[in-house]
Length: 227
Ligand SMILES: Nc1ncnc2c1ncn2[C@@H]1O[C@H](COP(=O)(O)OP(=O)(O)O)[C@@H](O)[C@H]1O
Ligand SMILES: [Mg+2]
Image (cartoon, rainbow, N blue to C red):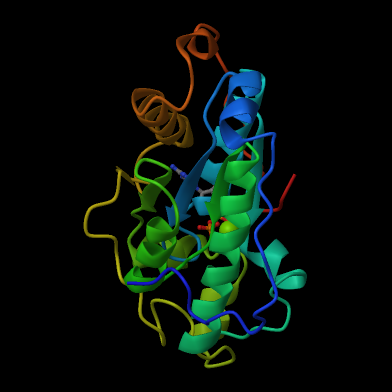
């Protein structure tokens, strides 16, 4: 399948090759660029784990960036809603943006529900083998709903929000993610360790980065407010 949803509208655009290549940036950073793509229901733990992994990577000297759902919808994707077509366009833009970060040598962590398998696979197809690491935050909907971090499940049940993933809009779970996290039952610390071990095994860091310990930080307080 083509990585593009739309064809170019201009004929007069010509790619300019940079002399500072991805390989040179990665050599300077001493780690690879990659896209760590977190997917799962609202409240499954994508943002919490992504930010905690970023913290751990940062403490080890890696260059990182988190692209987070709600933040991106305030800006780049502020013109999009939650219909299937808009969700598809949302993921396409995020995929393109994540790819740019990766080419800049950065480990980019994305935290979007990204409910459609086809949309996620399209992003996978836009980048090279091993560049896209899909991490499924596998929390049962009952647990997400009990957490209700943003009060959105309550609103969705009261039909105050339409097209809410898991309730009035589908979620297609990954069939073969690089990593499945049991974010419904395991501790945050364990989930972070699993992601770190997995991306180390995939060769995203060099071993020097792994010699130090890191501290896992949760960006949420017990009452669910963001620190
Ligand atoms: N193992 C875990 N991983 C991630 N979050 C967890 C975990 N255990 C409990 N939680 C809690 O679940 C909630 C997940 O919320 P959030 O990260 O905003 O979800 P999402 O970004 O997927 O919508 C947070 O309140 C977090 O503290
Ligand atoms: Mg989130």
